[in-house]
Image (cartoon, rainbow, N blue to C red):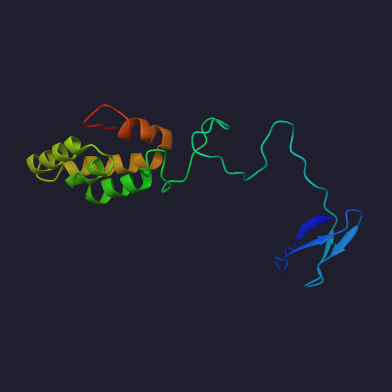
Length: 147
């Protein structure tokens, strides 16, 4: 039996493997028989999710707002940097309290101009890969990581 998805009514149904044409039992739409797609040797099926850092696919990335191994999300950190970066909230979120305090002081000294730098930093956080974010902002020994 072969699994089909009707393009007209979007319902799944099964049909015999040797059928030349298949009719959807729900809407009656006629479809040509499908040949099952076979993956080339050694490749993973399309759409398979890879766990973060499992080594199956180098450079595989997770979603922007998904948390990495540290429990920190680069999407949340990026939004905090864009919206409240002048207060150093994104540094506090990443566990860099000293960086957050330095950020507050820089904002006071520069009369708020420092907020432009943290805005750019937030955009860069949202655009970088998750492993880069973890290495640079969460696991680094730097107390005040910038770009």
